[in-house]
Image (cartoon, helix red, strand yellow):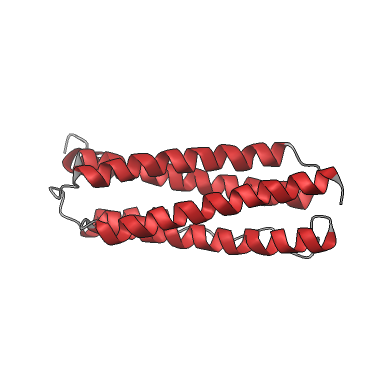
Length: 176
């Protein structure tokens, strides 16, 4: 097996470890929190991370068996629904609902996870030559970015629900 293939296998093993650790974190916090947005956000991202894990695991197995990046494995994973979670909350949640300190800290940790994941996959994409492999890593980086941005939005909501609603509803004076 070439050193290039061994490096790819190691990168996928790091990704598998990260995805599993993040999924466990999100599941734990989806069960712990009593805040509806926190429950939905953490559960949605846990599901996304599990799907990424399964896809990466399949690639890992094939890479070991075939000794090269598989050409027949779909490069995409399902998209994420995190934006829809925030939209649902904006439509249904009381603007005065408060998140507890643990919720806010969990979201901050999650933002760090997603920032690191976005960078990790982005770096992998920059350092591979295979176009399918590059697209796969770019796609994963984009999902991690979407998670990060949604979590940042969630943190803003947790820290100031009323202010968050004012911004999202875009109230303005129109002179009427």
